[in-house]
Amino acid sequence: MEKWIFDSPDQAGEVFRQFVKDFFQRNKLIKGEVSIGAQTVNLRNITMPMLNVYATQDHLVPPAASRALAALCGSQDYTEHSFRGGHIGIYVSARAQQEVPPTIATWLLAR
Image 1 (cartoon, helix red, strand yellow):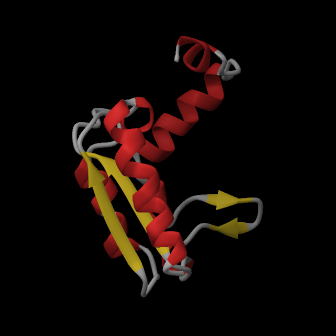
Image 2 (spheres, helix red, strand yellow):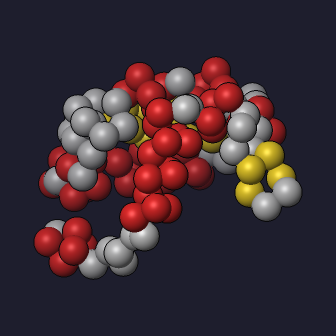
């Protein structure tokens, strides 16, 4: 796990500062003010089936922030699954390894 944590490329300071301002402080994604190239990102345009998996004790992406996606996306086939754990534990804990992959696989197989 340490290799995974420390194997991330360095981020340019100004890019990270702008990301924090745009996505955390100004909430631009939710307000429809994010652009990629000439295209404005509109979460309502996401109409494909969506599975939202989140950790109930996540301190970086709180459950309320994850659950908000349901009201913001345009999908008619939206499913949420919460799992006990934190931001990293939902991927690497023994319990998560037993619970998360089968839940995702079941959801995918149904579609």
